[in-house]
Amino acid sequence: MSKQAIRHLGLGSALVVVAFGACANDPVYIDPDDGIVAGLETDAMGDPVPGKASFLLPIHTERASDVTDREKLQMDVTTKYGADVVVPYVRVGNLEVSVEWTIENRSDKDGQAQIEINGANQFYDYDPKMVILSTSDEAPKTPGLSGDVPIDVPAGTIVNGLFTEDDMRETSIDLDQITRGRVNPFRARLTISKNVDHFAQLTEVTFVDDGEGGMEAAPQMETGVVFPREAFAQMLRFDFVFSADQEMVLRYDVRVRDVRGNVLHDKLRSAPTAELQYMDPYTSENGFYAPAPPAPGA
Amino acid sequence: MIRGASIAAAIAIVSFAATADARPASQGWYTEGGAGAVAFLPKTNKDAALGPGLGVRIGYDLFSFFSVGISLGASSHEATVPAPPSGEWFQLYRGAADARIGGRFDRLALFIEGGIGAAMISSNILMKVGITDPGQRFSVAFQAGAGGEYQLENRHYAIGLGVDGVMMPSFKPPGGSPAIALDTRLYLRYTY
Image (cartoon, rainbow over all chains, first blue to last red; front, side):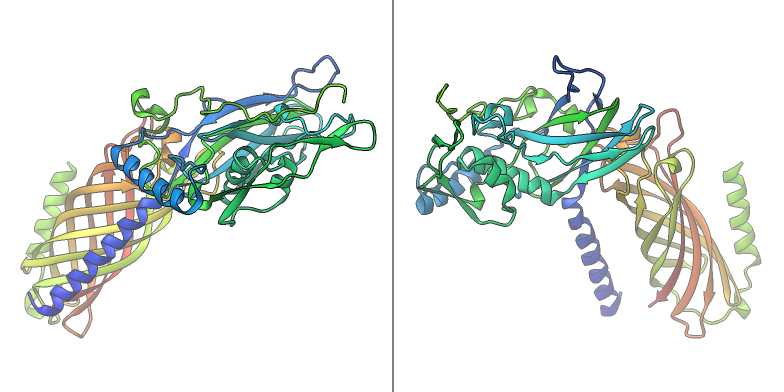
């Protein structure tokens, strides 16, 4: 075989290696078992009862090499930022998650729906109902981590949409900011943090008179603890809250790119339980984040 | 019956090939690079659309009528599974060792080919409809096809059109037969 032929063979082999190397970042699609139905029941006040469902990512058990990498990163982070910053097993940037959804309006009336996403990372669960920031009746309710946008769904039709990778990365960072960083959920939700390289932990939420007979959250100070991006915790469980004023069903599909390459189990939700790091139902190490509410009657 | 017809076609090609008047063509190591389209046959085509494909082949002419080679192919397809998800694409990668038998008719050459190799799907999106199982990305691939080549005046170059059927037994829709992809490509061949 001539040198030219060998060169062509080499080039061809390199192209093949590049092509297959690109596969490392291919997405996987994870289906929930069922859709979420809403709009069928009403509560005592006559308001529609939202449908709820949780979805836990099938994370592979932490291997010895993962532990070594994490401990090395922990040492680096501790040296630079102090011992208060814990590096999680699954970090922001290890996975890129997006959620595609459809809403089917099964009724014969036009309706409106909302999808709210909350969830949990390794350290905390977040449910906005457990975070009380004001005693005023007129205060807006504590926001969820993502969504909460009214969606018009004409009678008998299906609409679709997407929580993008950017949306879900922002959601993960907001969750970490609210819980470990103690950032006010309104502030976390309304600021764009998907590209930040660190955030500062704030003092515990305290409350002051809002001038209208109620209490509201007071300004917070920085504690001096700083969380660098390499220690941001990835959201692992997604809690969907689906509200609708007509009978509707939400179907969704979670698309994940395993950027680190070994975080998701190959068999996804069919994986043996012993090979999954987190069990369903999943509760984080510290449970629900619930800052001390305003004093009763204050 | 198909095997019998293939053998008969091969014998016919070799028997009637008139090499004496054939346009001069190099023989030996060769490479091919081509582009075309890959389509799945029913039932798989319900969930995977026709997509563009690329392929390369490296081979060696053992005789004027027989060669062996290695082929690699990649194609991209929109997954048309029930939403969600929608508008998502996956890639099908294939590699095979194959053999080709054929003959020349002046400027034209006809051939039939067959081989065995492996196929890989880039994502699990077809798991939603049961074509792949959890964690399954690979399948054995059996391929067979035919094609023709036009020899250019330069003895090193030929252009060709090839069609291959690739059966992947591990990728199988529920209640259906194994997935078969039809790869049609226009290619350029260079013989060293």
